[in-house]
Length: 175
Image (tube, rainbow, N blue to C red; front, side, top):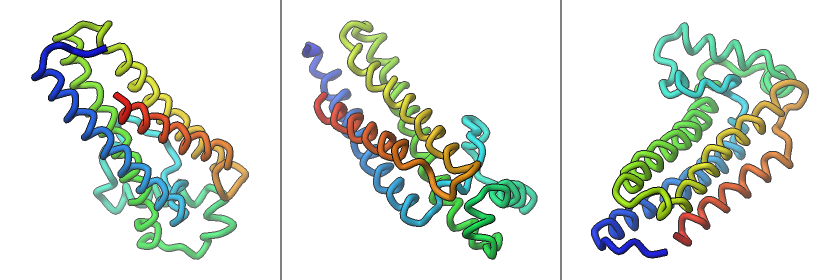
């Protein structure tokens, strides 16, 4: 289904290009998060308050003390200090921040395009947005799987998380 307004088509093209690049970047950062064993460093979801990183020593200690309660710290990283924790924290934080950024950069233009052309012409983009939201939820369930008994996340959930990222990337490119 083509949108007949050429200027809207150009805006949609650049919007989806930006989303495609951001998704590519988050896949790379997610891989580095996995390779550096950083994915369990943030033990709470904090959908809105998690936008801001810890800025005080007290806040850093809250995050580090939460990390000290999980098996990964107790069994593998028991000698880790706060400075070492900050390194793994930043990988996970950047990954989650990119996820939020993708959601915001996706939904705001989508609302604009819906107001311009109606929901029927943009239904496929709403599907992509729902998949982006589902991706965040799956990501949290994946992290949660490594917080109680394991020192790593569940590999099936990790595969689902990565696979869905490639589906979203493909749908963005397709459109």
